[in-house]
Length: 374
Image (spheres, rainbow, N blue to C red):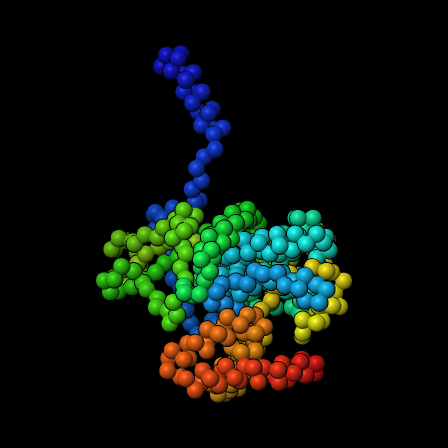
């Protein structure tokens, strides 16, 4: 090699090292297939069965500012099956709205995925933060999640979202993904890449899951973030099916990751107070003027639990679950359920749902308050 070529190669290498590189998703290679340990799937190895509702809203998460008495409340809830995945991005939107008020002392209601990420981001923005919650990890409902990267899982209904929601979803998704990248490699693996396998026998393109509702799908907007799945060649896998595919996905170790978030919040001077709120008027007891509301599913889960385990008939479940709690989270859920009943030909039940929500709602709320006070 002559001197000119040698020096030119060094210069090119230096420039390449200094230039900004196009980011590609970092994930384990799909080849070769590792040796898979057999699954010891026996009934006597099941140590717990949990059931929890997702705070779904047909129009997508509620990220709005509302005045409640002398408080400014920023709502941050209703993410369906995408709460953990979108938590950092959604909380970024909520925190921006909260900090725009100009107050530095902020309260957060709820200590789950949305509450903790909101609190940490508020601290990073210079706020003094107190979390008020009845429960904290591992008791919170979001601690029962599977811990998978599913940013558009039951996030909204296709025909119910606003025109600008897909762009907002993409912004929240990318913000969350890049934040999760900073947790890769930490002790205890709070976030890591794992391989997932899908198995099927027929000749369709892959395993399909049909939903009763037309849930919105936005994954195509962020295809560059994660590697695509690949079907494994016949004979290359140990599964007793004709077809198998593998993809790599972000996975959250919910127990370790939740503990990490709580520690991060407390180390920065945050406080967690065990408090239970029964009505919005009780927010007046807080000293903070700005509140981020990161709740939304507990009341609906309680009523549905009664319906499932204490033989509530169908109509009261619709009135109480969709009516009362829909009013708490948003009237879009209540409206959607009423329209769905009417379209299904259940006109009388739709009418009962409409009128019953207005008439029974107040009585049910009073009963709930009385029960909570016991």
